[in-house]
Amino acid sequence: MSRVLIAGGAGFLGSHLCDFFWNKGFDVFCIDNLSTGSAHNIRHLLDRERFTYIAHDIIHPLEIDVDLDYILNFASPASPPDYLRLPVQTMLAGSTGTYNLLELARSKSAVFMMASTSEIYGDPEVSPQPESYWGNVNPTGPRSVYDEAKRFSEAMTMSYHREFGLNTRLLRIFNVYGPRMRPKDGRAIPNFIDQALKNCPITIYGDGSQTRSFCYYEDEIEGIYRLLMSDLNDPVNIGNPAELTILRLAEIIVELTNSDSQIVFQGLPVDDPKVRCPDISKAEKHLNWRPVVDLSEGLAKTIQYFASPL
Ligand code: UDP
Image 1: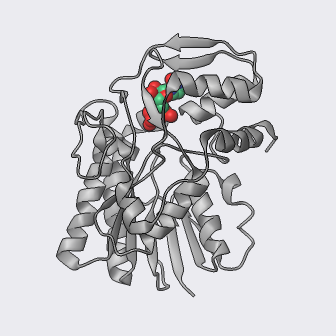
Image 2: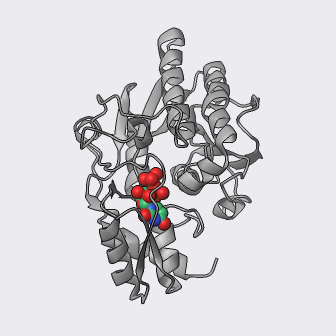
């Protein structure tokens, strides 16, 4: 039976990965310090065999006395308000933390996957963004704590691949959404749904003309799994190329919730990317993967989750 360690396993995507691998029969080791993750996301797994939760901050070395086949690094604050609130912690998670997990992977001869991000493209001057695009990142702005830590993590992962022959994967995640996002997470979809359900003003930052491309978590997890099981060591974009403006997103959420909310416009955060859209031709060609859940279907399920008491 294969063993997988998921760092950040109590977070939104991490906890869905714990479920996914557990359901496939893996032995799952979930590592989290609950800085932005939540024990609630994994509570149903805690008493099960083949599931182990270890409270641990990856910025400290991790020793674990079993063999491991796969190590997935999903441990980092990921919502802009979280990483802007936790700049040093974010930098350390994406540098020392990645190093510690790479060392663990080397000692176990495990496959290592780094959860990277579309943020490494910064405010892109090329759209959609192929993996070959090097990006347009402000190296010292407020968002740099996330962008540069993830860029460091990618470079460090490739270093372990080149120097030690470690079997590595670089996953570039674009905006993902779904159940288990926190209503107060601060990102656009949870904010808009939370506001719409309460008939409160919907807060658009800037004029709402900036674009994003949202992938439902089930599609994302399938793409992650196919990448992990592939032999691709170079970066791969896993996201949904259906791009829309943030204003349109807000309008769709108001419609789907039958909300009385009005849209209000607020200041745009520093270095907020103007466009974001994945070029997924590499994933389509090599992983035979593309997202299948359309936005209104995924949003309806997410709204249902937000509307039901936890
Ligand atoms: N955004 C917004 N209102 C909110 C939250 C976010 O207009 O209440 C905007 C944000 O400025 C960005 C886009 O929505 O342009 C997506 O933001 P999110 O925080 O979801 O993720 P990002 O793609 O910036 O990492």
